[in-house]
Length: 320
Image 1 (cartoon, one colour):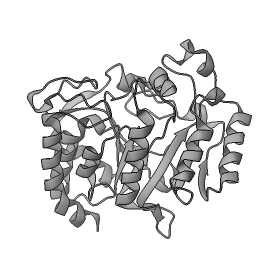
Image 2: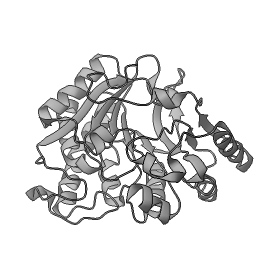
Image 3: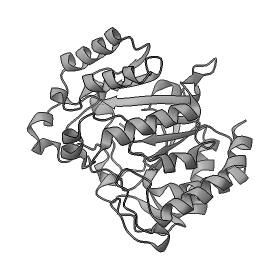
Image 4: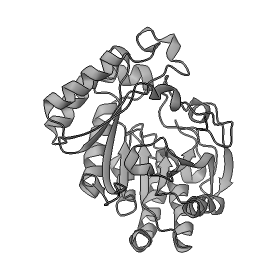
């Protein structure tokens, strides 16, 4: 089912990604550097386009229920990041450089081994800044029979040009929508014009795959799940995020309201986000979403904040 479609589209996707790297416009920073000549942009990628730094490849049960089932999502975490979130729970890989540089053949082996282990999908975590080698590794795996839905798990700071590469390749989009206002996006993530880039990306994603479709077992087959991590003191502009989504026709879309915030990395240096989220803060946002008419909300237990703290120096980062 998936293999035939992906194989049909992967060649054109790779060609588009290569062209994207000539003057990099993968994300909202629009660095414009020639990454095919190994120039280094904001994401600080030092590998050539035949190699990629991978922090972890593992079955992961910590994603939304329709992505994990009983076996787990086949997550591949890529090192570095195009954002600089001060509260990043994955700072070991996004900032500190944890991970191993592998060639695209090894990356393809990771995809295939996850399929053999029973993964329900291949979940590309933070792949925006390495999309060209990711697609090259995916092509090798597809030619060897990989037949799983592809999940694109992103912070949302993706350009139209990058998403054009993924049309016909990605089956399930899993974007963040972090903020509405630039002051927060710049202060906490060093991302100018974040909302405009992200909401445009999310609208393109939905136009490609539609709203979420699950099978008879409740497992996602296709569609979009929009994530929003709620920060303390409404520093994530949560109420405005919901208003913007409603005004753009997302009331029927699946919205994952995340309570798991835990002050990590540099967050303790910022007064408004140096504590965990209060239950009332979370419940108030959920109630507001319901009042606005959102029909497909995913909510988390407050206790989940500790469960989502990985250690990428271990072979199994999410093992408790």
